[in-house]
Image: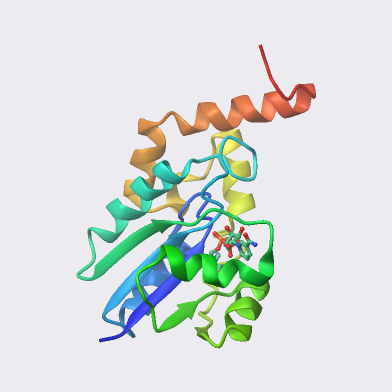
Length: 176
Ligand code: NAD
């Protein structure tokens, strides 16, 4: 029995992430999806809460024939102990999947086997690009799995991103 671990911020979970998990599913029996920066939300870089990202991912993975666990992982202010923090929060895993250079280095130095995955349509399927399209409310739906589009609708995600962008432009951290 092999269990894989895939970490990301998933702001939002997009079709590139989903293709990675489909590939991971072909290599392992179970997958743990770590929602990184779980403590972050309501900013332009991290608009969605850990709970909202759990909804997005859980609904997408429900369509797959695979045992999955979705685990929120808060950031900690010390990279050297981050892997211990991850392993304390997650079911045991045998292999980690990431293309993030810092994540790869930290797992590698902790003796955890790391595999990289191909990047899918990276010109389009990239978080910052998708968040900017969401701010403009144009051309973002086709880049996300349908359950993610539904979740964003349910939580009024577009209005939130547009409001946060307005707040940032006005320079007020705490809008009245
Ligand atoms: P992300 O959501 O940007 O990406 C998740 C994974 O998907 C990455 O491996 C990325 O390369 C891959 N990906 C993105 N687009 C893709 C595409 N089109 N095709 C294929 N793969 C694609 O998340 P991330 O930034 O890699 O997440 C790492 C998390 O780990 C962050 O939350 C970070 O804060 C956390 N972290 C925290 C610490 C700490 O707290 N000290 C240290 C290291 C990492």
